[in-house]
Length: 245
Image (cartoon, rainbow, N blue to C red; front, top):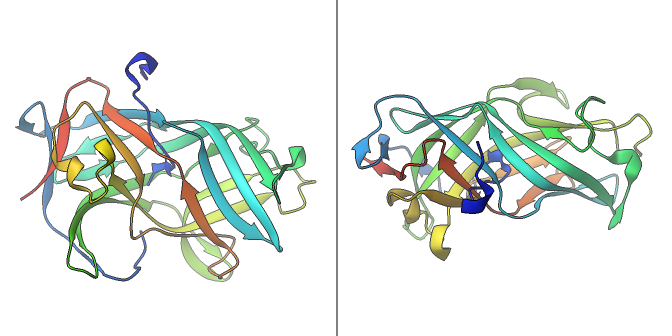
C-alpha cells in the first residue's frame, strides 16, 4: 500500500521507470539487494508513486506531443536475488495529452477505452548494473527491459508501452513506446547513482544515462524523453539498498 504521509512515491519513468547504448557501454557486474542490513534472500515486494507530474515528450507528424500524468504506481513489482527486479508493470493515471502545448481531449489516454486517463506499461524486468561513463566514472543504474516484443515499423522491437487513445485522435489511436530504459538513484540530490548503495527507506529515481526511447519508430522525429522523479520503497517499510559483489 502507498503511504502518502511518508512521501512514498515513484516515476515512469516506471514505469516505472525506468536501456540504450549512448556513449559508453555498461559493464555488467554481479549485484545483490540488501534489506535491513542483510543480503536479500527472498522475493520482496516494492511500491511507489510519482513524486511529481510525469511527462513523456515526443514529436508526431510535425507536432510537439506531451503526455502528462499526475499519478503513477508500481503493480506487482518485486526485488529478487542477484540484483534483479521482476515486474509487474507501471500504471499511470490522471493523464492528459497536449499537442503543441494545448490539451486535446480526443487524445486523452484511455487504456484501450477501458480506463480514461490511464497509461499502462507492458510487463518488465530489471537488473542493477555498473555503468562506466565516457569519462571513466562508475555509476550504479537499473536497466528496465520490456518483456513484450512486437513488430513495429517492420522491425522486432521491445515495446515498453502502448498509449491508447480514441479513434478521433489526430496523432493516432495506439502509439507504441519502444526502446530501452534505465533508472538512476538521485536521492539527496546525488546524481552519480551512488545513493542506491546506501540503505534508506525510500530512493528517489529518474531516468538514467543510457535511456533511448522512441514513439512509433526509431527516427529522429520520434525520439521520446521522460521527465519527472519519484520515490520507491519496500512494502515492508524496511531500509534497502543495492550492492556490487
